[in-house]
Image (cartoon, rainbow over all chains, first blue to last red; front, side):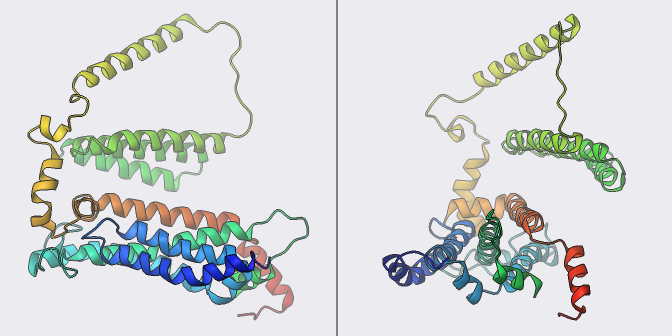
Length: 158
Length: 191
């Protein structure tokens, strides 16, 4: 339960920031280069899963509020829908790229493509939160007779 | 007014309502399947034929799994000789399927030749030539994912959301009732 060896812990400590940074890069440049919301979110979630593997579950439970994560999950899902519904406000169909239609940015720049970067960011939040929750939920189930996860239960009952 | 799409939409809405309000689990599952296959035909009519095969597979799989979960553990085994009409009917069905499969195979473009070259009105032509102009996204994949086929992406996000909700609900330690019970024993104001 105390995680893996010192080598793994040290390397994880160095690498984790860069993994999150790479996930953010994939998201931010999703409309320009290969990447996007789904791969970015998966990368960010993997950083947290790596922390969980290297330092043990307890460390993650202490540092991440899972109530917040599940709320983030729901909020991002609703935000994605809200971006889609905003298309109606521009008197267009569902999911119309209203920003690109009203004030198009310069092509190949970071601020371009209208709602696509916004959608990417929202999807990243959603996917990262979802996958982190999946990993946590699956890791919390242990078929050890008599074994309990007080921390997780406390978190659940909070 | 009442074209095929509207009729199908009405059919799907009715099927979904039946699935929601029926008391019989088996009829609910069958109604869900009906709604799903309505959506499959709808995709075909709305000129998204590439979505249809996936949709059919997913529909059949979910229907079989749900039926299995609903009907229960006992398996029905057929013993003895199969009635001749049934055998003939299944043979005819297999032959029909094979015929259509071969026919669709001959309609496919040559191996190694993209269909966008073979067909003048292939959607991928528009995606590549007009994608940057229409969406402003330099990445054509993102342009398709979040602009031309944004519905699909919304569906994917919904699938992930449903999956995590299902996982959390199924794998939690105690149900809400149990938790309230145990809280009630301890005095109740834990919050």
